[in-house]
Length: 97
Image 1 (cartoon, rainbow, N blue to C red):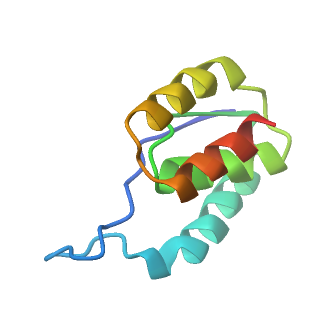
Image 2 (image 1 turned 90 degrees about the vertical axis):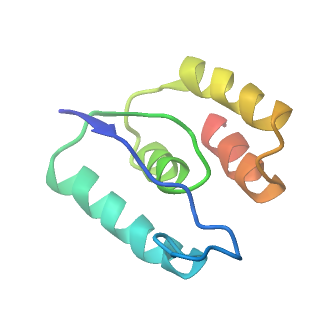
């Protein structure tokens, strides 16, 4: 089964109305992995925004889901050019390996 994800970016530190605080990253990681496993995912389609997208893509890679390297390389290049943050660029680079 191919899973499509429309994720959410992690809130900025000064977010007035928090929706995805940094403290929820590990919870989202566990839930993303659980959904991928429960649904029997064979591939994950997602952007690579700094948040739920990268978290789920990272888990998909660890589970050995189909390679989405071409799309990720394009998104990684965009991410680096637009300086979305060193931490997120490191996660994206890890997914690519």
